[in-house]
Image (cartoon, rainbow, N blue to C red; front, side):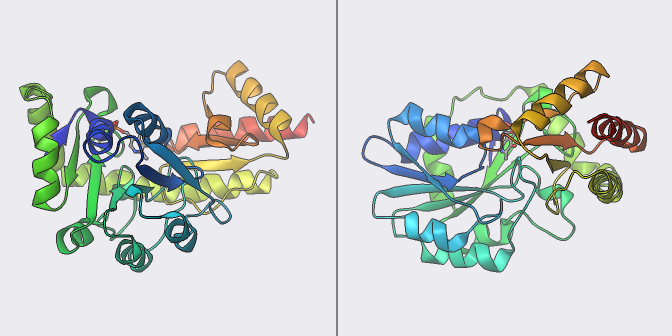
Length: 279
Ligand SMILES: Cc1ncc(COP(=O)(O)O)c(C=O)c1O
């Protein structure tokens, strides 16, 4: 295990350690933006792979990985789509990669999925699989900046050689330890998220705003077009409600809506209903 200032730091360390000019770093079309940014910072070439209906397409990733591929980043569940693929598909991907490439399974949202280990077992068994995790999502500690990576010792050794020796404070480590021991918190949040996510998705669909089946703590709400998404965002802001525009992720007609508590979910569904009714 290696700890980082958020899993973001681990992603950065992986790019700096394994990619540089002439190398390629592969990720999916609507993947987390930091994959591209860190890749560019190292001078390597970012390779964006098309998804199928906003879901990871393993065959497309395999087809995109040539001999220059060094890292393949896959957030599972993915942000901002909320979709995920199963472990059998991930294993097929890992086993099909060219020799010099490492599959990085970004498990930032893994805890929201019942009976899913984020790829830990694969990272234990396969030499080219590495997993990142964070305390920023289900643990609610985003501002404290604590993440971790897990995988083959050879990779951890490389990352430790370039990691700043003082990257995490004692306070961060103590908070992380207390959080990881609080299993009731995670179970409660997962159950409540699952319940309200289903409710919210259905409520929005009834108002003419569809979404893919989400496995994370947000819903990617799809609007008719970009203009409608922008207008809805402005309306929500006028009501004091903040959601996330995701045009930067290549999804201009969508808004990412966090699954809050029941009162928040009812409030946002009501507001979106008002917005749709006035159009
Ligand atoms: C998919 C994914 N990976 C990694 C991160 C980085 O999280 P942190 O650095 O807070 O651990 C995020 C944050 O939004 C994310 O959505």
